[in-house]
Amino acid sequence: MIIGICSDHAGVDYKARLFAFLKKKGYTVIDYGTDTPESVDYPDFAHQLARAIESGQVETGVALCGTGNGMAITLNHHPSIRAGLAWNKDIGRLIKEHNHANVLVLPARFISYRTALKTLNAWLEARPEGGRHERRVSKIPVSTH
Ligand code: RB5
Image 1: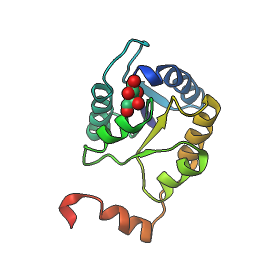
Image 2 (image 1 turned 90 degrees about the vertical axis):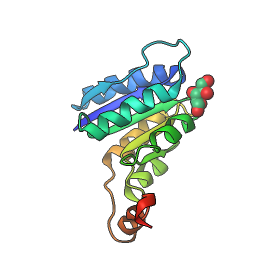
Image 3 (image 1 turned 30 degrees about the vertical axis):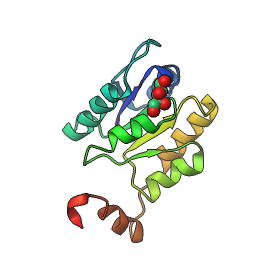
Image 4 (image 1 turned 135 degrees about the vertical axis):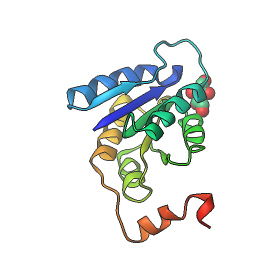
């Protein structure tokens, strides 16, 4: 699986560590920045990751900023993106099982690196559930209702 990853300055340290972790696990990972702790604007990176998923360059993504909300709000403006904000392993699992999240968003300033790792692993291992969850996810796009 090819995974895209991005962050702003608030998430750059965790991003570098998660990038190395994912590579070690055998994933192909593409890093869409940022690369330094210098202050940047999270939408510039969120849009890059979303476009990479839309174009098929990567299949799925991980995004980090301070609260996670800037990344999640921006990513979810793209119709094919379902970005879920998760701050523990149970929510990491549920955003995949129930919401079919194709991007995991982590609030880097509010969770430990260990929790970020556990959340990422739970999200990676989870599978989207069908039935009522599939029906609900199918109702998310504005054009279908
Ligand atoms: C950056 O200071 C911070 O605003 C950003 O990382 C994020 O929390 C925005 O949603």
